[in-house]
Image 1 (cartoon, one colour):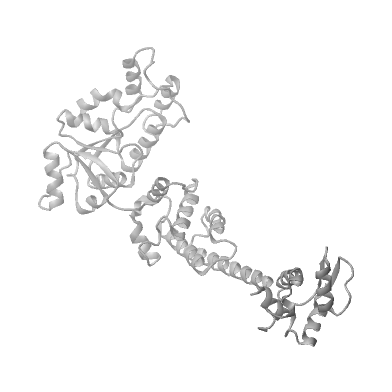
Image 2 (cartoon, helix red, strand yellow):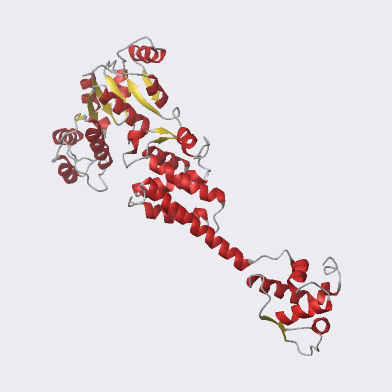
Length: 417
């Protein structure tokens, strides 16, 4: 065989023949059958082919039967077989038909195993499960590697642990989840295949697009109650006096509150504190940091929390903790459709009461802004009914103006002073 690469079969005039034979044999699954046709032969190619085939080649087109060529090579002992010769000259050859069959078997085995796994986890009954399965097929590819097969099963187990759509009720760190399910604390990082698959599952569950930016990925993790970390995201508060003293974290928070200073609490801070307020304490919750800042400037000693727009996981956890401690939550947001949506969630989920969020408050703000309403933004978007006041939504639709919290700043500060 070693002589094939340097012997008469290595004649450059036979290059096109061996290229065509190698292609055909690999397509055949390494079987020697069928024929190839070569066109446009020059004199050197015709001469070389004639010597190889043992017959004259006088035309510029020739048909070569592979079985006959194989037999001639064996009989002349120039090579052990046609496949062996071509493997030496153009190899290593690949059994493409066999590889396709093997890939198909691997794909079938993976999706069979996944379906069984999803059924065992109880996910196969979820309406989003099929969409997720189709979504991750592109990530696995046509030939699933062992690591890809392992990643999709790990992702399924992660999705099963996240529970139902009320994911924030079972908040946990992504590192801990990865260590528990994947066995690697970095197994769900943004650049991991399992992490990408889990995010696609969360997106399918909530009916949102797959996240394309780091910020969108973090937000989607938090939507499902998974924290990318416990220290980088904070919630702004004022006047929190934990009822028990002694622990350093409690003392530090109480000291800032006593000084009238704001505090940015992380999720880890919340874990360090057993109780946040005494039962029955009144807590004013606002959407915009300017409200809390103005209250602080006015020397207010009220207990306040600012959710800074749509509540993040840490803000949600703080409100949960306050409600569990028996606090009386009063919520105030913007008079626009996103503001009404946020207020609905806070009021329904945490049992908060509206704080100057009624129809009368909205209409009074319009009057205070002047009859022309030229300095109020236009209300756009889809109308959202207010769960606490059936007349508020229609009033906003009629006026078609946004009233931000800052418009009521004097009244709000008088409430918390």
